[in-house]
Image (cartoon, rainbow, N blue to C red):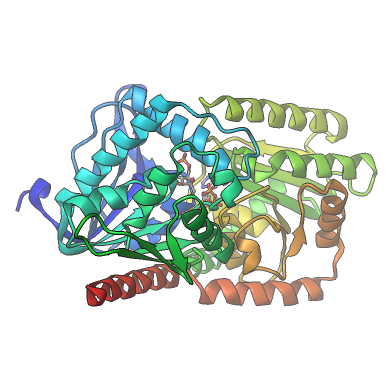
Length: 479
Ligand code: ADP
Ligand code: F6P
């Protein structure tokens, strides 16, 4: 059967494909891993599993033809230049992203952006309906596609629909700011099962359904009245925290070449006694400015000094045409320059700032080289980097400084936990992570390593799909 007519029992819909299309100077087209935790997790789940993945190729204009990688059919969805601005940069990342992250920066509302959000969600829904076999499982991901469940349900009452929120779901007082809040709730509630990272996120969603949708929400089931002559609809809600491919990461960390690369990295930055590491998309939710401020004050107070202690900050480029991201980059790079000007010596920079994306091998080398992993988001749905670091520390050495405003905090409580808004507290926590006896750090890392190895990304996917099946079966039995 020609690729464009094949149908699948499992169809994924996510804003991004697992790969971005890259066209280099002489027009050569290639594909590279796309950014973010969603892709990291779902690539591990889908690799080798027959299914289709509907997503955007990462650049504007005509979408490439569907193609296969690792047993998956990738079905690119087109976004025009205008839709990249109004749907992706606009509604997704300048309206929803700030609202869902404690309005760390103000949200922007444009009716034009909302219309683009509807149009692009429709396009995703159409592709999903074409690819879904009868009775298929449709797994919709994240804040960019919250209308897709209802749009698919209208066309395909036969399929099972799950939706997972990779980012926080905001308190009802913030969600209420959205002029289109009810339309978004209705778009989501056509799913059989809605998964969130934390119980707090699920609770926020249930409260929004009650207070802003006027729907009955008893326990973890939301009841939406049916149309005239139609039965009511029941959507199941639950917390299913995402994770990482921890067995693969541990295996990578155990390779001699990974250990050698870690030694090279430490050598290249002046062989510090203590290497601190930050790894993030360059995003205002990650608290990069807060951790650099704490580090700079520790240097100024003489509590640490390079090359004895040094900081490596990897900041992956992200959403660079958005003003909030452009000004964040300026602030971070000015801060790095000031710190290095004041506290570096030749061959021993106080901050090694790397504005690049790296492959998984290099990431493993960085995780092995780091004595202290510094993860200080102001708000983060989960933060897979924290779990990747812990999975990589197979010898149980190392220390994790972790913000309490991450989903990961709820599973990694033996970390050196911090409130990144409290700079004095963050400084003391960083010092405790540096100075605590190795035996005590080892006990904490052992507990966290066990948790991450037991609760990996495959277990997360199985838990989600099992909950989705149970919800869909219950709906059918309820008639
Ligand atoms: P988010 O989804 O907000 O980007 P997460 O921490 O959940 O944050 O996921 C980030 C993912 O991107 C992780 O898998 C991490 O290893 C990866 N990553 C982050 N920075 C880089 C980088 N510079 N190069 C390659 N991968 C990166
Ligand atoms: O994992 C959370 C997330 O927001 C994904 O939805 C997104 O794909 C990823 O981070 C990276 O963001 P972007 O797709 O805007 O580059």
